Amino acid sequence: MLSRTAEGLFWLGRYMERADNLARLIEAGRRFDLTGAHIETESNEWAAILIAAGCSNTFEKDPEEATGAEACHHLILDPENPSSVQACFAAARANARAQRGSITTDVWAAANDAWADTRLFSERDYAPRNLASTVDQIRQYAARMRGAVEGTMLRDERYQFMRLGQFIERADATSRLVDVKYHVLMPEDHPVGSGVDQLHWNNLLLAAGARSAYRWVYREQVQVRLVIDFLLLNRRNPRSLRHCLDQIQAELGNLHGDGAHSNGSLTHASALREDMTRTDVDFILGQGLHEYLTEMIVRSNKLAISIGSDFGFGPILSETTQEQSQ
Image (cartoon, rainbow, N blue to C red; front, top):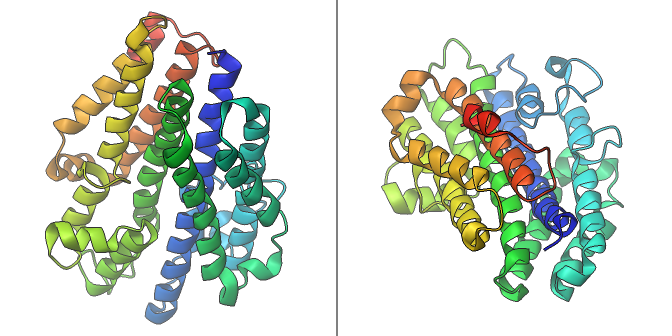
């Protein structure tokens, strides 16, 4: 496969997943905002969302001063934000168009329709009364893309590169979603483990679409340690960090099977996954949840660079650089 084809499919998967994950962060912000209104906290939940989305530097003013409307504008349709929902769907559609001969009609239609509909979004779509339905609409476009890929793509290199992009992006996004909790400051009269703290963790589960699955697995009320275990370490949860790394390693194993490419990314992914198999909640909390998540975000981004290097659409990394990134 040509490297430009691999790159286009990889980024098609990434951009569609990124739009979905932005919607999940916005949903978390919406729920935190509602919670904050009831507990009279001075914490700005939308600043936490902008930081977790990696958009604090593109936001035009201090994120701590962001209102919900300003944050949603920046995350959904700000032309100055290259990672807005509109920008993600536009980039996904551009990659799909460039690789039209490598994807099915259903996959093309999913990318094209997402772009065509969301480019018409306006301020009214992120007004408080409409925000929940807008978030749901964005997630439906991403779900349609996943369904088209799973239901119509041959299980070959094209499929594998799209899956790699999807799970690289999801691994990064899950870490960012959980890290939102670090940036949401609790009032002094609502310490860690309080009812409000549990409500915040419940909101994160809902934003991740994992509330029902959490109950099926643990049959417990929301507990911080169990939420961390479920969103990071539980391999049966399709949005967990562990599950994403399992899928990345599997797809890289398929791609490297012919021995035609450098296997630096496979070595990197295997080392990262192996570290997770030896990790438990006590280790994460001992290291510090925020510190652990920051490290995982950095390592997953280095893995993405390593994949590009192996398959010819990124900088060529030396063996020394590969080792330092693990």
